[in-house]
Image 1 (cartoon, rainbow, N blue to C red):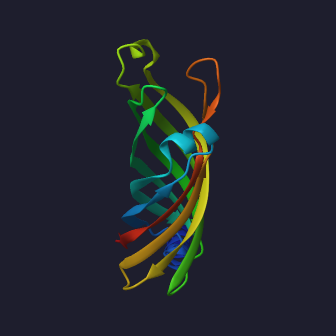
Image 2 (cartoon, one colour; image 1 turned 45 degrees about the horizontal axis):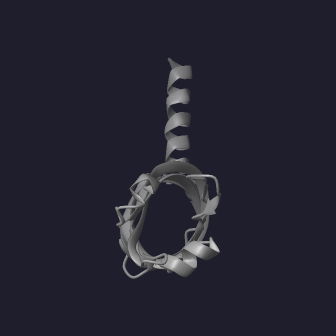
Length: 190
């Protein structure tokens, strides 16, 4: 009986000492900003676009967090070719990520690494080019970092730079749809 009591007291003290270590913290927010495309011809034709990126993350311990996110909104239209036919390029992606945040009172820097699933579609409104419609997907990694500036205990502004390498080969030529995003937004923590 005495050994059980000592073990119970030891476990209780250990949990009290490490209680904040394993405290879960839930964060949710939305980021918005420009997205570039690395491929020179795509960039020249469609240019940069704006994306929005809602996310949800859970801080698990030691500043480590896990999360999910979405990137949408990139849809660019341009006139293509000799006959200036209307072409549209759309991209969207889903992400799971792990990161580390250095927690501070007012400003918290963080880094993250993600695994992404992107879909990309290009359509050209032309009776001659219907067979060249592109509608495909690819998985890739992403990495980034940013700052959270705490306005209140539960409310923060976030600024993030994220790079996604995304080389695709819809036909015979490889196209680099990857690029960097500069995002800013707002979030809250529970």
